[in-house]
Image (tube, rainbow, N blue to C red):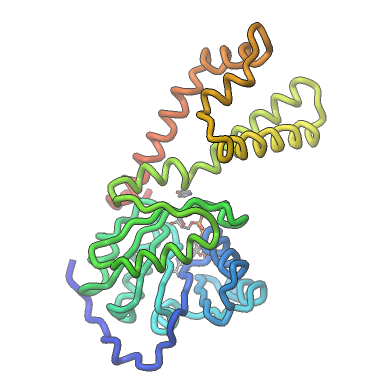
Length: 285
Ligand SMILES: NC(=O)C1=CN([C@@H]2O[C@H](COP(=O)(O)OP(=O)(O)OC[C@H]3O[C@@H](n4cnc5c(N)ncnc54)[C@H](OP(=O)(O)O)[C@@H]3O)[C@@H](O)[C@H]2O)C=CC1
Ligand SMILES: O=C(O)[C@@H]1CCC=N1
């Protein structure tokens, strides 16, 4: 792909420092934006873009941030966080390319899209970082997995960690592991919601009212998650502690194994990893 003409930094001499723009502020972009504000970012230092006018207005009203066009945001911000769908990324980059200077840090949160895909659509040495966050950034319990592209420096990585670290944990990985991480932590919350939904249905089958079944399962999930994080015990040990000889739990575990739930989870995450790879290769259907 040819390198587009790009303005030099000197063509935007009044560019302020430390402005971050979220481009394509949908679910994950808004979750991140709200977390950044919660963690102390001034709305005046944050910019957003949206495809629809009413969405831009909503973000302006809700967060007190300025909503601009994509080129406008690229010219004003030092850091661009691209949060559109992978399918919209090529069009967004084509729109941005003439306006992104080589001292603008470009961070992509899109599944599958590689730093190379972005680098080849921007000029020269534009630093690019790939991040896979997840929706728990909304409650400051996000998991954001970070990889540097060819031109991103240690300072760029540290800046990305500052942004995403404000709303949860961060982990640096080689980019070759991003598709797997997308399957694990990017999509991960959805698997747990799916389990809660299914287990709540089981509660209905067992005769409990839906709201009580929901509350019981959610609190069991929270308790289990805190123990997984804080006890220092292996998950096998934690499960064994619940599983009494000739008790109730082992009967449930036998059914889970009979129904191949472990194999289903492995296959499910493999399918998610494969889809992330497909998105990278341009199969966007
Ligand atoms: N949802 C999740 O849990 C996670 C998502 N991601 C990644 O984040 C990205 C966004 O996902 P998600 O937030 O769920 O999706 P959304 O559809 O909610 O958000 C994407 C937003 O981008 C907007 N958009 C598209 N093209 C442009 C453009 N050219 N200029 C301005 N805005 C544009 C869309 O506008 P419109 O509303 O008009 O369509 C939409 O609001 C994806 O790449 C996904 O892979 C990463 C981690 C987790
Ligand atoms: O489902 C998706 O494609 C996005 C990426 C990770 C979570 N949601």
